[in-house]
Length: 318
Image 1 (cartoon, helix red, strand yellow):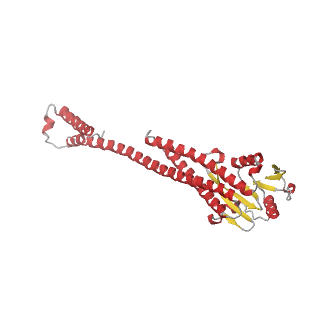
Image 2: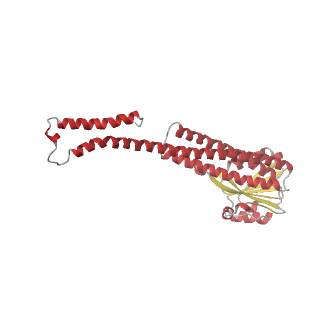
Image 3: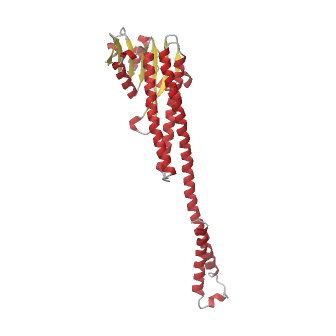
């Protein structure tokens, strides 16, 4: 589906186009948003506006160094936007394509994003704030980075709760390890997305096609991204610390178990030795003729068991 935003009498109107035959190429277009575009729609837009629009498969294979390119007529940006499929805890980076030519913005995407819905509402509500495609893309990046900041704050809160569970509540188990792995993966995805947008904005700041006001806005967004990257790195260090603490807790619990087995083994050695001696089949053993030899041996075995236990308790092994 294609959403066209057209300037008319100082206003901006939106037209949802279901068929490419309904597109009026002579209109004063501000933005064409291609959501789940068909091959025919991409071919028509490419031919009409002389653009080279990559397919969905081609976008995913674009090298990092070629995610931004510019010629005399157009600017093309392929950058990551975070999405959460099916409201799961796993984040996924979806590639969004931005093309700017003759002050028109073209966006190609294959997923729904609230950012685009909000930007569309802003364009319709305040058309004077969006003179060309560069105004649009700067606001899209600004709003997307705000969403990333909210997402990072939420993930950071989960990280603090996990650290508290490991350090203070002494919780162990597979659920802690699973949550730790999920948070690490979420931070990595978020950092990749921020890195990618930082590269795109840095390249946009070097172009001579954008005006000074747009570059000023993009410069502020770039500073926000740098702050978020630093915050992300801090959280990832905290997660590494949690992993170390988790491993230490497991080692401590294992040491406690081994210590108990050691105490039991040492405590049982003397009575085992005594029972072994008196289990020998020697013909002459004086103690066998004693009247109270049996209870005496039992008493010695009990005492030899209790004494090591008392000793280990005194040494605070138990």
